[in-house]
Image 1 (cartoon, rainbow, N blue to C red):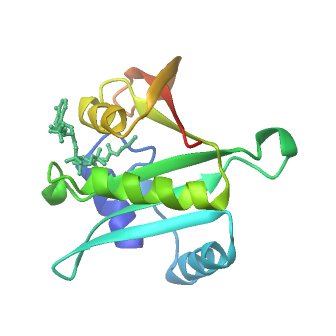
Image 2 (cartoon, rainbow, N blue to C red):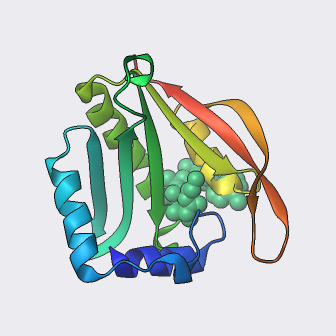
Length: 155
Ligand SMILES: CC(C)(COP(=O)(O)OP(=O)(O)OC[C@H]1O[C@@H](n2cnc3c(N)ncnc32)[C@H](O)[C@@H]1OP(=O)(O)O)[C@@H](O)C(=O)NCCC(=O)NCCS
């Protein structure tokens, strides 16, 4: 996971973290993954192609408060060599089924406005644009980027 987070963060600017911000020790990451495994409101999956990890997707509950208990949030990233093969679609289809099984009614996500590939994928998978966060991200080069808010009805 540590290698995955570093490498994917270096292959695209469309993820929240920069590679140097991945600073988990093996012990800390092992603890985090152990906690995720025990958490009934956290789904994490890897896609494997010919024995190689292609990417990771996760779904987490927005929170335990009753007013937001119906919502979950999606994150997904593949290594660049596996982009454009339909893996993202397959992962989201499966993650949506699992999320529905947990009882979540809505899946939310945020995507950088310039990330056309991800937005095409999300629309294909049933997500609808619901808003835009102005200057949600500031890149190291000083440029600001809006975030598009999207949701998918799981009911
Ligand atoms: C975004 C990501 C998860 C998509 O997964 P993927 O497996 O490449 O997606 P798929 O191949 O299933 O589908 C992508 C769709 O976008 C389309 N697409 C590809 N490049 C595109 C582009 N530049 N503009 C518009 N659409 C594009 C493809 O044609 C495909 O649609 P189709 O099946 O109807 O032809 C993956 O590319 C990735 O990990 N990117 C880097 C990290 C990232 O951006 N994560 C999302 C953060 S919100």
